[in-house]
Length: 425
Image (cartoon, rainbow, N blue to C red):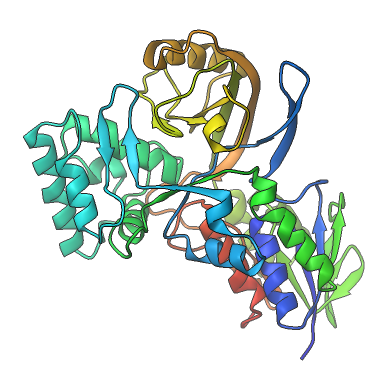
């Protein structure tokens, strides 16, 4: 039976939800407060020092080979992942050559074992400790005490392995420091990426801006298939009616809150129902972590499109992307600071000093620094996340809703597709 569906938010979860619902034959109207699609994974216009326009991103996103929902939707929209993503085996290599890299094309877990045994700069003790704990995790089904942090989970590893593998993996996947990050979620990510399918841990680096990666094509698909997308419209009121739900006075059979958790909490609380109020309190209680991206110009080519950085209190960047090797202008580098807390100016100066010391890049100049203050929820042990079902006919989707994954593009898309399938609500 055809239903009238409102999707509030046109980030990746909302777009996936709208496509799924429209494909099932329902009438879909999307409300998006911003003027661009993509939510917290979107393109930003900027200008290079010579005045030439360039599209940057509000953050550097890494996909992995195990992102089946994301890659599947890209193909459905006519996007060839091989054309827009640079695929490389999992590696956490530093500019000095140290670190781990798994071989391409090997089946799991042999690829990981080979990567560990071949890790540069690691002692036999470093490698043996990691192999032993990985086998232990596998034997226990990648489960641990739900209250355990990643720091506690990995306490038996050597300091070098914790510093050069666990910390960068944790902060890139969970955007939460190891002392506060959920060990159980970390194990789920490791299992799905490293132990389930050939190439599942491959890093997929965007060659195009985040808008061209999926949101622009999703918007075109929705327009071509009769869905309505209202841009620059922030929904003010949500309420239940005898015949369904009212979104700023417009009636719908079902409403999906695909906006950020604080915005979803505002709308759910405004509905004034017992279940919506309780859900809103849970969503509002989520803590968030910032991600900063410092774009610089004037650089020279790096040994690889992506390098890990050695971090300290005065050296905050965990990764650097060579955008010149990923379809961007030569010399454009992007430094990523996950779980960022420094003031913008201080952060830029620290990153420039870190680049000089670790990369030998002395001629860099800041181009643009993007700070997403609430980029992701803090993925802490035992965290209670809001459910996808809020009330009859009212759902939520996004990377923060109840589920096994941290705040990732894949988690957002899976949540959106589930909400758009119009199961029980």
